Amino acid sequence: MPDTEHVDSVDSTIIDLLVQDGRRTVTEIAEQVSLSPSAVKRRIDRLERVGVIAGYTVVLDHGKLGSSFEAFVELRFSGDVKVEMITMAATSVTEVLEVFTVAGDPDALVRVRVSGVQHLRDVIDRLRRSGPVIGTKTLMVLGAWRRDGRA
Image (tube, rainbow, N blue to C red):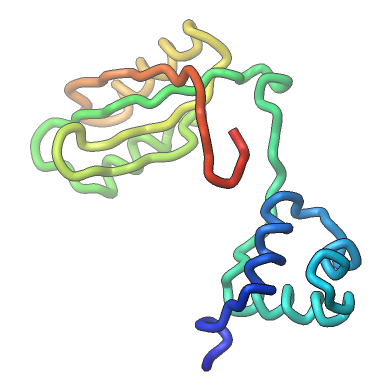
């Protein structure tokens, strides 16, 4: 079986441990999965090589950075606008975190992070001017849940 298709229960445990803490040492992981550190290192290297582990990241406390509010902005575009145009228009606004182009109404759902209501208003204004936008609807995030435990 090729490397890309074979992720066993030990690999899954290693992945779970790294998702919880990407800075966890190979020795700590080895203790959890009852393998030698070198065996764990080989498994991690293989998971990286085949693309199962695509990278590592830092989890920020956005409140401490002054941008603790998130919102979703629905964007409606005029006429028959290409997906690339929608994405390009939305990503021109620096506060945009993600753009989801969707089937149906609206044309896109955009996740933004802002410092407050006035900042959100400014971001919405810039989104409206970013392309042939004919309408927006904003949903302020009150709370969030993620399967990986991060909020």
